[in-house]
Length: 69
Image 1 (cartoon, rainbow, N blue to C red):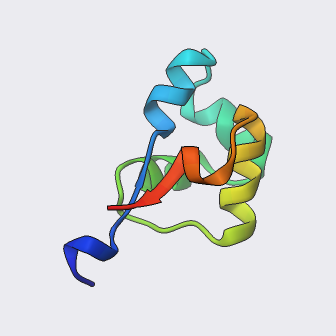
Image 2: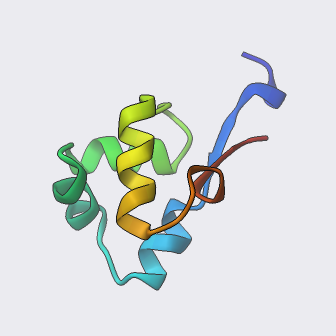
């Protein structure tokens, strides 16, 4: 995977604005805290369904939460 194919996200910023821990976000979308941590740090790409669930938690469109670098 080249650098331009990397999926970036604003999870850390959105969680801070919403006063949500990784654990709290994980519970809301049905995954583990470790999964949220890996997504947040760019070590794992979420499925489309999971990405949509995360965007829904923050009330943001998908492309405001995730984008290609």
